[in-house]
Amino acid sequence: MNYKIAYQLYSSRNFPPLVAQLPILKGMGYDAIEPWLPAYEVDPALFRQQLDDAGLGCFGFHMPLAGLVNEPDRYLDIAEILGATHLIPPFVPKEERQETSDFWKGIGRKLAVGADKAAPRGLRVVWHNHDFEYVRLPDGSRPIDHILGESDAVLFEIDCGWITRAGADAALELQHYADRIACIQVKDTAPLGTVEDDGWTATGDGIIDWKALVPLFRKTAADHIVTEHDNPSDWQRFARRSIDYLHDLGL
Picture: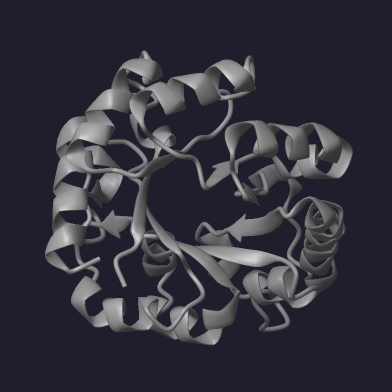
């Protein structure tokens, strides 16, 4: 299976204008972009037209969890305008997090309510992880398991880089949540202690053994892959090296 490959626009937020990046990404071979706020917020229809003009799709987009809770219809409308099927809340701010299983189960329930509202419109709610979901709580449990444990309707965008940074095993997570994984983010990380680019790298240039993970990708429910780098000094180098490496892997 050759996966569709998307590029997370957050990676190049420091190199505006974003619209100028779109034809460059298409030329590199990307099929789609995965935007974050505020890229699409001001005028979703205009943003969709810019994607169409560049020949790029949008499979999913990052959005605030509060938006899913407080303005679900607005974001469901945005999804339909962008042609996306996945609404992806990616974060709980540090100041809001609590080290209790009940808190994280509550996050899971909020996602589940959003998923139930999205389903009649053919849309899905997908959680995206960082590292904090893999830090064990005082009772020994993990936030990620509570978040995804409340409803099978909530899917998972697995970020292999953040899992690795947290000291967890991406291979085990790919296997454990195989049937819940809607998309795979192939973020790579340099050895711990690396300062350049905040320690992130292009996919294939870091410490993650992607060749060992690819067979596990193929056992998940994912239908596309997403490249991301949190702070590249050269976004085009990152984007090109990453997609070229994925193609070399046969993805």
